[in-house]
Length: 233
Image (cartoon, rainbow, N blue to C red; front, side):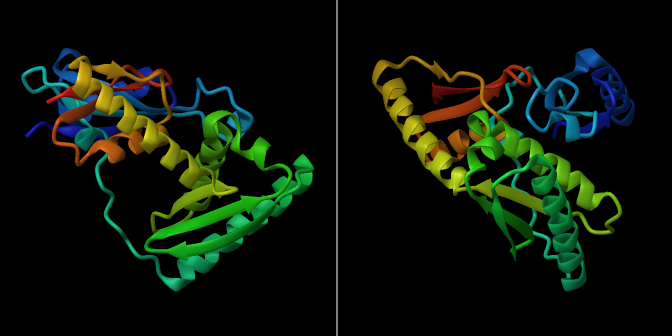
């Protein structure tokens, strides 16, 4: 089984060096996926993000491409204790109150907990600003606040930010698109490559087609230009 490690650094080179040292491998012996590059993102919330690069470094095995199952591993559900839930909610509430006031946003929000995740749902006249182009601002806010609440927490807390039910609507839209393109691939017997997508969007495509036994999906390229490919099995 190929060795895999997630490595973080303030630059690509630092993250790569750390990962190679941990795996005890050379650069030509691995494939590298940029999971996050906060130094490159230019979004409404980029100023809030920690300046770090996160890489997924995988040992090469016969040159095989990385499939959806490798890109998106199911995360184990770890239930949080009541004290951690309440403490996290207070931190999020404190941050959002100050942020909304300073940014003069028209937003209300609800914070809830379910099955290991804390959900923050927002709505209001400023929802479009919070969501941003294809959810980029929403993702950036989620990354920043997740880092904030986990800074001094003993438990790893996972957050999901949403506004006006954007994530569910986008997931349904992408599922429809994925199935239409899959049908075209089956009919024409030619693979199809989507335009660059965020990690959230790529996961939606992979998930929508995971039970289709006639096609397969995999991702190519590096962030922020990573794309999903649909091909015949």
